Length: 130
Image (cartoon, rainbow, N blue to C red; front, side, top):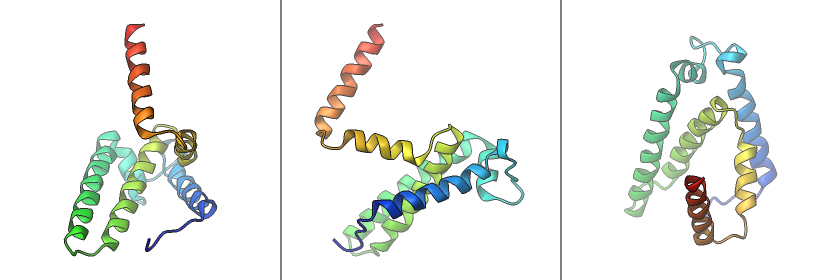
């Protein structure tokens, strides 16, 4: 597959470096909305960055659809980068890190997606019966 990168260490390191920068932009860490796009998003509150996540997710879908019809495939990577970035802003706001997402994905490794979804439904049902 074209463009596949199989170096999870570099990927994790890159995500960790970006997460560290985003952390410095949190209001609690002195992020200045006049000097930083991330600080501005965080200063505006969840509605601002959650809206961006929705917009970027839609742009990923549109880029993929365009690629299916002869469009520039590299736009998929560009739009996913935007989606991941804005999602990382949300993670930081809610006190999470990319490492926690990676750990969750690793926890699911080897588990059928169908089984995973069924397990979550059972857990939700049990929680609602408590």
